[in-house]
Length: 534
Picture 1: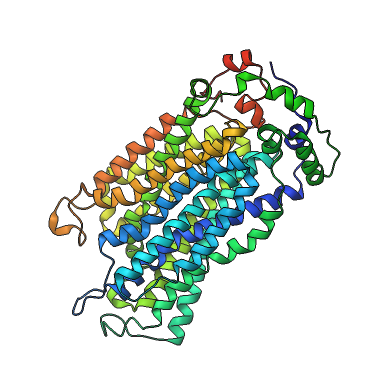
Picture 2: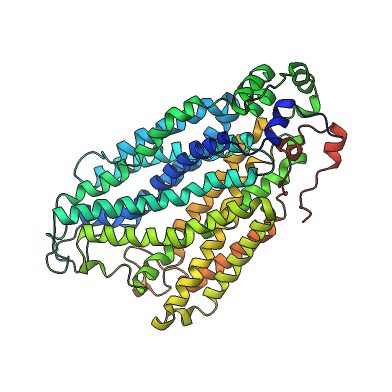
């Protein structure tokens, strides 16, 4: 039997969509905008870094980052993000969402600037300092995942909560696009001011000394949106659910939300104290009682995010082939260093505009209509279908006249990743766990996803190499080939379908209803259904 919900929490659940909802989306969303800009802008400048610091005199092709350096430069931010998700997720439950929220932004601002100030001129010194600051940048970015999701879920009403959390996550698409657009502007300005011949005409002259400023400016600009958001975050009141249910201060929760909702709310301190005396709700994280109530849910959120990110971050396997096939990026030796940045940025911006951004906003539009479970199941299903459709007749797609078909199938795969599990795996962990574990469990789920991202981005980079040693990329061992890698990814997506059945549906329900916090002991033990009824 459900207990009476605190008036302050009920007021949030039934509140009409108001200005403060959109303010919260913008404040939390700008963090994600910055996260995406900072994480994805490195892919715009890795080719340029190779040309500047790893030029080989007399080579027919421009210099490129060695495989171990490329993996470190691209992957070290993922390692930092994973650590930040776990640490700040835990800290958000210990100190409060608001106190920790500003910390993550300051780390991001300082490390974005420091990334562009990498010391020295020797390749080892530049790459070592770049990797050091990219790790700590990732650490700050990692904290934004559990905190932004938790804050938005605790501020939202239950009718449109899914759309609000998904809208915060959807700002990633705009961040990726902004990174591409800014790189286009900077590279165009430098190309106009410092024109240079193509590599094939003059290998050394194709990389002007000023090109070293291009990558530094692109990385450092990521500090600006984060800095702009800091003041707004510092003025946000702590969420009522943390203040009332974790800090046990009903008076402060009622006072804060009275200002936000512009209505009178009764504190109900006595009810909070009565609830806190209920020993059945005092179980610890990973205790036997926690595992009984939420163990399968946590397995569902961690496994689906892990599997999704393996597939999602494997996309860099095919991007260079796709971009070359449709003429977006010509052979490297036909361009100078700054032109190559322009072409890569243009391609990434077009992909974001045509595939990434629409997928995110389809989720925002439909998540509270058809539910999280249906969207996640549909997304994994279509990703499985399209991966196998690319893999089984792979030789057919390699012929020049069929390349456009390959691009369409590839784009649809990632449209359904974004209108599917890429958004829902972020939304659901912020809704189904008790308030005192919510940020921690979201951080654990997100960290599991980043582990999958590392497998997808780097494991498959090695795995997809040709079994023929003569056809592998420079510095890489032989692998199982692209076709077999696509088959493996199809299986990964199919496993995502199966593990989705561990994740409960939270559409239209209050956070306390999902977590069992306002249930009596007997009823909460009896109602441990995991598979949603749809």
